[in-house]
Amino acid sequence: MSGSGAPTIETPRAEGARVAVVAAQWHPKVTDSLVAGAIRALEESGVTEYKVIRVPGSFELPVAALHAAKGGYDAVVALGVVIRGDTPHFEYVCQAATEGLMQVGVTTGVPIGFGLLTCDNDPQALDRAGLPDSREDKGYESAQAALSTLVAIKGL
Ligand code: DLZ
Image (tube, rainbow, N blue to C red):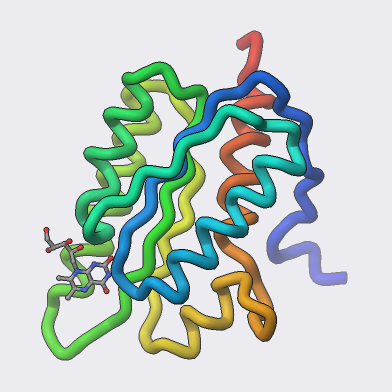
């Protein structure tokens, strides 16, 4: 055993939590599957009050997450896929979305599940999308992370 790598996170119980899933529309095969994975995690946790908010691209995720966080949601799951292209655009979108989401979390205190895939190519994204042939499901994992954080900080 190396002692490194991703932990096994138990699916938390989160009945009564209100959760917003904000998701970009680029690369719809992958983002739609990420949304499905996130919803599966929410429902397994007993969450019945959730809303899916679709925005055009990953650059728009932070502002949607901020509105949700300030609008009474207990947790936000942010989902998107950015695929590297020929220009530096990839770096700008990834950095803006990542830093923006982090700022929303730390300024509002609302847990943000980070389900933004930043990939060099389509196969990398498909492999993490929670599709039947995928090895990983980052939509499910990021929803689990947001709920686990919500449960962990409750009462602090
Ligand atoms: C413009 C753009 C490009 C080139 N690539 C992606 C991408 O791979 N994934 C994604 O979510 N969004 C992309 N966008 C759109 C930007 O995120 C944003 O929606 C536009 O720049 C409009 O503000």
